[in-house]
Length: 198
Ligand SMILES: NC(=O)c1ccc[n+]([C@@H]2O[C@H](COP(=O)([O-])OP(=O)(O)OC[C@H]3O[C@@H](n4cnc5c(N)ncnc54)[C@H](OP(=O)(O)O)[C@@H]3O)[C@@H](O)[C@H]2O)c1
Image (cartoon, rainbow, N blue to C red):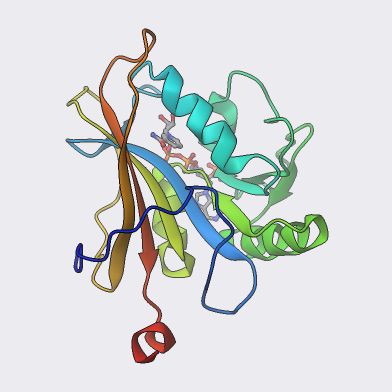
């Protein structure tokens, strides 16, 4: 991570200012523990009610792209108020109430088209690890909930080279009675080359 000096506090769901193509931004939404863990036994490795509410707010009204395993892990499918896009190599896979895409490129294209139709400023990439890994080069923004704990888990957030990214805001998430850990919402944006020149 470079450049942590320009901290401002935009609303986390404020419309994106800039992205690579001047169109719909690609935003990762992820919660990562201090040890990198994001998942356990096909589900989330913690109870964090406040982060689930934040997730809902950050993704509402937007297309959401997820891997087949994350789709299967959802307690209620599809997630309401959002265009659910499930990525799977299984051409026969049926995801009731969702779009199915055969690869991340098609998922992204579909997500951007749907966002355009709905006037949404972002396509949200909601995991899991395989999908974050495949789409990092397309990402403009990351809404990262840093979970201050070290839970056991079997799925970790891929290690990315975040050179060229900056933190635009960082604020604690108020811990409620149904939150197992303290957490912080960090918003990061990629500085595309044309932004650097500006
Ligand atoms: N903490 C968080 O913010 C967060 C967010 C999301 C998920 N999670 C957790 O992460 C875990 C799941 O992550 P995961 O990495 O194991 O699975 P995943 O990314 O949700 O899904 C993986 C599946 O997606 C499909 N896929 C992946 N890359 C593809 C590509 N390039 N083209 C076509 N299909 C592709 C494949 O489906 P097929 O096998 O059907 O072909 C693959 O098995 C769960 O524990 C979940 O709870 C945590």
